[in-house]
Amino acid sequence: MSDPTNIKTPSDPRIDRLLARSALYGMLSYFLRYPEPSVDLAAVKRASTAWEQAVATLSTEPSGSDLVEPFGRLIEVFRVLETRVWCADHERAFGHTAAGRIPAYELEYGEMYSRREPQELADITGFYTAFGLRIAEGSSERPDHIAVECEFMHLLLYKEVLAIEQGAEDGARTCREAALRFLADHPGRWSPAFFRKLSGSSSDLLRAVSRFAHVYVHWDARSQQVDLGPSDLPIRQVRDNEDSGCVSCTLGPDGPKREGQGDADTCRV
Image (cartoon, rainbow, N blue to C red):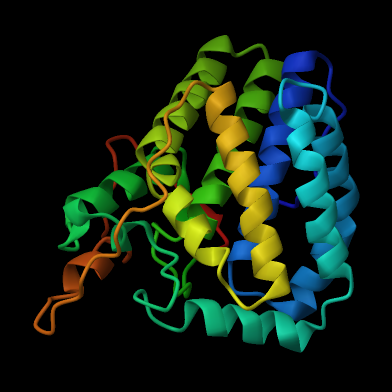
């Protein structure tokens, strides 16, 4: 995962806004993946100032002020959180399988995913590989995990900033169009249902995360004219004889690649 504090001084309003959006998707990725306390505790505390600046930047836009209060609550809860509670809350909410109490995987939501369809996972992975990214070796997460998808949005928006700074307008447009498609087809389709379920967690932190995420993703989708999916998507029913192999087949070193793919950067989640 990119260092969330690695934010350059913006040179124009476009960059300011893109960096703010990128930072907040990165923040969601941090809070929604399984915590590594020795690394994440210091990283989150170090990044909180940058996240606060991002919220302040977006608060000047229409409805952007709605982000201020849930963000403040999230940081307030985190600052008094014990690391053992952080890990225990995550395990209690998400469990150790895809079909946990609150599934954090895209393919667990919606009737159209009553089977684990490999082409859908391949589509998600195809986005990553097209931008030179891959899941870190040894990671136990699937590409459709909410934290991975949020991290990808974080990276796409940051890549757009780099392209603008380098005068590569074609590259910036490619990143912008990919971010719109990915948001509409993936996290925007199922995350409203996920965040609604997460709001019922017994964890103060995860409830605060779900509230901020709900407000932020809705704000970002509206600002990009992206339609979000419903908050009542059903959880797919797991059949006793269901073959789970097709879900993991895209995760290995021989998973789907797009033509012309070079060496990929590692996506840490």
